[in-house]
Length: 521
Image 1 (cartoon, one colour):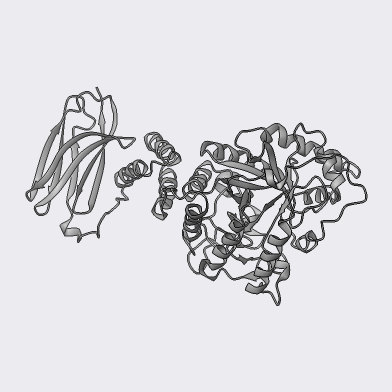
Image 2 (cartoon, one colour):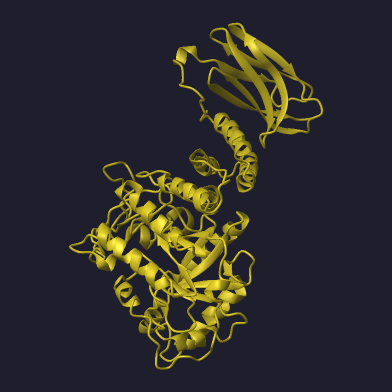
């Protein structure tokens, strides 16, 4: 299992004085004057969740050996190790459909990429599963045109050594192998986050390699050493700066006060003014479940204050004019630092990221909070019928439209398919069932020469009867305008169209009805 230990945060502020054995290799970072660049927003991401549908079991981070997601709680949600419920329900980090959903949400919210919490390359505890899911995530990140980077957890070295997986004395050699793996697999990719052509590497700690000399040895075999960011304060060379984190070690009687948070943010801003680079973090609050799960004592509580905490920390982060702002986190459900949509707060945090991007980076950023609902609709349709080839082809087109920013084209296809599959999208309040119109069966269907399309109106109304291909492109307009009450028939031969499936859509008075039609020449 993987589990963060917060006592290291207190000691991280002490990680600033030169170690006796520094420095094995000198790496000269860019000066602050050379380091001006557009701020990127990267979300700290946990790839450590497993579900029975993908892996055959519930992973530790959903259960913590205490909760049972197969049971429902008093509110009807799966009983997971969290105070919060993802809108998708508990998911598997290796599920391509959830990765598509998450990366599209990032794209539409103005997030540039992820910082992935990574436990190395060994098949020990769940480290191997996390590595597999990290590869799957990075493939999804690349498809979405986003960036990625690694947050290395060097606590893994101690765990593996103390449990007999690594031999004493092999730690540096293993660390070098880990760094070489990062270079061979990711550092040199165009989509890996870089500052002045150097890959960015974060370290949640250090928790094992405590001296600058250790890290210089780890980097000594690489062709280009990474730009290195530990937690809290930068150590001696080779670190170029550090990143901030929710300062739960400052909690008093289990609560981190607003004044303590402000003191921490001001302290980080003051300290980082002397560094070559800094990565400030914004976070929505902190509400862990460790005590309820009997894992250990809670690390404390930071009130989200209906989004005020996230906005406060966002503002403080952007005030530093940093190369990277880290969002803590996308999905740490155990600690409650979540910005991905949940049943409890919906799209609140992603809407705030959209607004911050418009304010601080790109005034012309085009996406709205309404656009954030589109990835979930895509997710639900894929899950509705995973083996439906026509549906998945259409959803592939929706993905491409959303990646390229064509949200209206994506919305059109989603509307069509939701209606065709029996979940019609209404543009007005649904009338009484006795007043509903119908789109009748087509005869013949499939057809080769022509077919008859019938509709029934319970009263006179304006209608539009349109045919689309599976990718949402209009191919025919069969009727438009005011029609009398009763049943109406329309003949259509689909001249010039290839064999295959098409969607016939009837709209009137805010109602939408869609059926599938097949041409077989």
